[in-house]
Image (tube, rainbow, N blue to C red; front, top):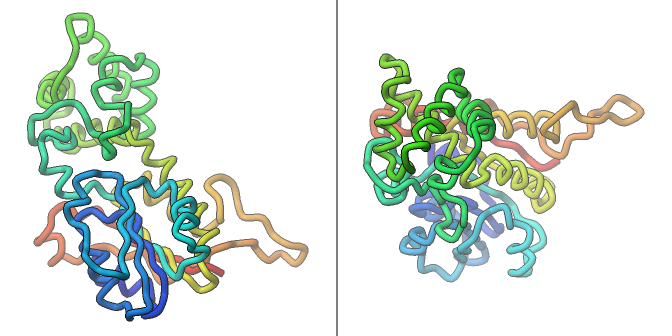
Length: 291
């Protein structure tokens, strides 16, 4: 949904933009193509591997950091407000396809799953040292798994015989207790839950959305691409209510105090795009404008 995302930003050629999930740099390159010599683009990525994709352009600045620090880095570079922000919350293809990163259920690798390799918390720590209650909670909350308790209990029982070291070992361990007809979907949800815990992904998104309101100019836009219901729900609710719990407050005249207004409908990838990139099938794109 690259074209839809770029169109959603409604780019001012002389404006300042932020791509908070640089990855391979595809979105950033598309934004730069639409900027004049006066325009500027800052991009964030906490993954050291993303530095290899750095774009050589005087209008571009790649920040090695998590976008939870959006305001702090904008202040560091002397920027108060920006014209638009793009966030693509998915795990990059590079991360999924690198077995040694531990993100994929298909490639054997260590239980890592860190987007930032300096993060002290790894999937190995979660799987081997979290309590039954904590494991059950993350599988239920972050994996939306109905059999969260059974999965957690299986890990706890296995740990009495030794530690779980690899992604393949984790898959093999859980295989006997997961429904065969939806095994791939269920094991992916298990990995998702652990990954979200390791990287504090939902808390990062919540903080980012709140900060985006503070740094967007009036009329500036934020474009978010989500890949599972937990991410999309945060984006949808924040655009609608300006908060994550409860309803927006109203003034004396009943007008709702909202920092953002929805632009258009939620967009999904086309059939053609899904054929080209199967991982895009669950993508949902939402656009909002600063009021």
